[in-house]
Every structure is written in C-alpha cells, then in structure tokens.
Image (cartoon, rainbow, N blue to C red):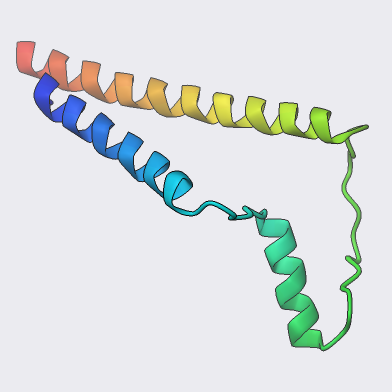
Length: 97
C-alpha cells in the first residue's frame, strides 16, 4: 500500500469518526446491552426486562468498567495491528523470494 493511499484512508477514517460527533449535538450513545434490553422489553411487552443470567464478574464501578472496556479495545487493536503486520511482512518476503 502506498503512503498516499494510507494517508487518504486515515483521513477518511478520522472524518467518518469526527463529523457525526460534530453534527449531532445532543446525541446520546447507548450500548448494545441497553438496545437489546429495550428490544426484548418491546417484544415481550413487559415494562422492564430482567436478564435471567448474571455476569460472572461485575466491576466495582463505572470507571473500572470503562477501563476494562478500553483495555479490551486496546488489546483488539494490538491483535489487529499485529495481524496486518504479519500479512505485510509475508507479502514482502514473498516478493523477495
């Protein structure tokens, strides 16, 4: 991949991430758990859905939960970057051979 293409793709990614945040002022971003709970409540026609299973580990507070979520995202990004690096090096070594 050429440097120009990578820079253009990076700029497009930033624009895709930033523009909606700038255009939608009073937006509230909910999680998938809340959306699923609301949908289940609508389907079952109950006021509030009570999950039948409880999590194995519940963090002591919202900050800890956010920290764990960030660590999970960082780990995923690291694995993704490592995979991209392996693919790039594999392609490079094939060209040299």
